Image 1: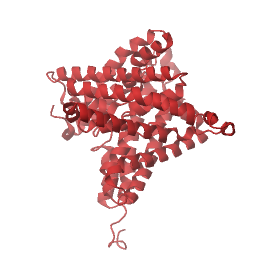
Image 2: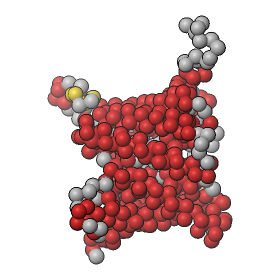
Image 3: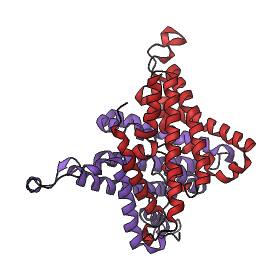
Image 4: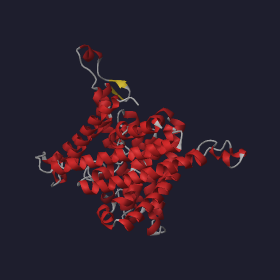
Length: 205
Length: 218
C-alpha cells in the first residue's frame, strides 16, 4: 500500500510529466491562456491517463511482453510481440479519447465547447502515450501500481498547466520585452517552474 | 538549367524551395508553429542523441508525408486520424528497430522518446495541414523542411547545453584544461531538464528580435 502511495507522489512531483520530461507541451502551451479552460483540459488528461495506463498495462502484461501469451497455450511461451506496443498503445489511447469526448459532450456541453479542438488532440498528447511507455519501461509490478502512476502523472500535468495559466493571466499586465512576449516568456517561466519543482528531488521515497 | 523541362514544373522550382526553406525560419515548427516540443527537449542534454533524434524525425516526417499524400484521395475523411496514426506508427516502429540494431546505446538514451515521435505534433500537423492536400513531391519536401527546422533547433539547444554543461561537443573535450585550472567550472545546471526550456525561450527571443513580424501582439 505504501509503495502505491509513493509511486503516486513521485509521479506528481519528482517525475513531473511537464517539468522533468517535457511531455504534453503542445497543449500545455496552447491551452494555458486562461485558468478555466486549463482546469478542464487538465481534468480530461487526469481522466484519460487514469484509464489508458491500466488498460495498456493489462495489454502489455497479457499480450505484448515476451512470453506474455503463455496463458493461451504453453507453446506461445517464447512469442515476443513487444515491437507492436507503439501501434497498440496508440490505438487504445485513440479509442479512449473518443469515449471521453462523447461523455464530455453529453454531460457538460459548456466544457465541451470551451475545450473545442483540444479534446481530440489529447489523443496526440505526448503525455498520454508517454505515460503508457514509461509504465512499460519501468516495469510496474501490479495493476494498482500502474493505475497510481497513471493518475499521479495526470495530476502532475494538471498542476503544471493550472500553474502556468494562473501566471500567464497575471503576466498580461507586465511589461515584457516585445520579442519575448507570448511564447518566449512562457517557455522561460516554465523553465523557472521546473527549477522550483527540482527541489522535490531531495525527497527520498 | 530548366530549358528541357520547361513544360513540367521543375523539381526545385522557387515554390518548392520555399517549402524546404520556410520551416527553417518563418514557419519554424518549434519556435513559430509551437509543434513538437513535447518529445524533443529531453534528448538535448548531449549532441549525439539530439542528432539521432533529428534524423529520425526528418525520416518519419518525409516518408509519412509521402505515404499520406499518395493515399490522400482514398482516405475517407472520418477515419483519417486513425490512418495517419497507423502510417506514422509503422514508420516509427521501423526507426526504432533500426536504432536498436545499429546504435543501441543511443537508442537506450532516447528511451521512450523514439516512440513519442508518433505523437509528435509536427508530423500529425504536417500530414493534416499539407500532405492531405498536396502531391507527393511537395509533401516530401515539406516533410524534409519541417524535420530540418525541428532538427536545427534541437541541435542548437543541444550544442549550448553540452558545451556549457559538460564542456564537450559531440563527446570531445573542447574547453581547454588550462581554463579549469584558472577556476572555470562546468555549469551543471545546463544538464538539468528545465534549462532546455529556458534555452528555447532565449532562442525565440533572438529569432523574434531579428524577424520582427513574428512578434505577438499580446
